[in-house]
Length: 381
Image (tube, rainbow, N blue to C red; front, side, top):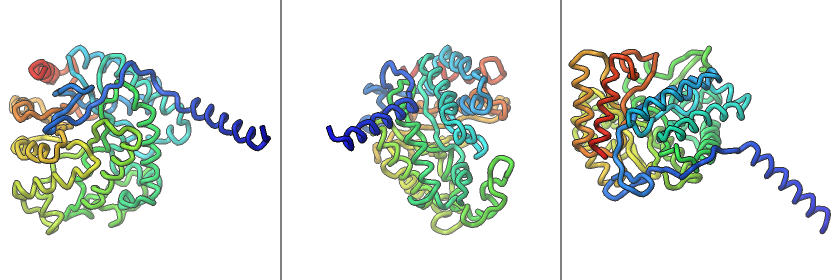
């Protein structure tokens, strides 16, 4: 055999061994996934499914910041004992500073994320990872303004594509991963009439730049391009699982913000138009967050969902505080989710110390909410 062919074969072998060494993935028992069913329903492993999960926002962040913190394992055990089927969580750093480990020691970074995924799998819980929770994190990390989210040639999109490829290919065969999500409520920062006053925070100690400009102001056009770019990259590596944006309900004035730069309230038809435009293909599901009186738009949201054949995921719902009135709001939202046949929803939020007026644990004075969604899951089953 010619020497140049032998050399080429040896080179390819070495590369394959390096890739195999670096890209070790967790063992999987079976591939669990959420896919779209007829009439905007959800199928889990091919069978109709409806479920109420919970947000476990910092289950990965806590071990990312402190490698020996595996408290998520006890948390998953608690959720399993309550019959809660899945959790939505932040699957990256929140601030640019949180991504230092990924930049310096990628193997250790993924060892910690592996721990979270394996723990959820062990306890039989599904996960919906939100890969880029804070919209300013990636642009700040690579030294670009927010508008570069819309530029396919930008460092921002390149970084996004690399992280998506690494995470999705690592876990796409893992039974814990149910669906994929971009981030958290990007559209709420789009086309604000007072956008100058609501540019991303400046906290240099956490990795942000020291100044912001008009290039850091999001528009709906930028956000939609982010959604398309993210979903397109995910589908390259995992063509079946549902993909959500992680968005909230559009602001009550979203249509008027985009078209007239005003806070004027939209009609229901304008709301439906904005909801449709906020979930472009290849986004395959509709993500919404519901608080206060958002349940008044559930019926129209389900109408849009069925028209697009994209199942609805209320990625956050809940009520702040501990008064009977706030408790009644939480129950009302949950009842509306069930009555409107929303396939998926997740309570905000489990064991998050930084939000004492929202956090739910098994032994605090909001623990009744775990029992509430536990009973709801029994009804749905």
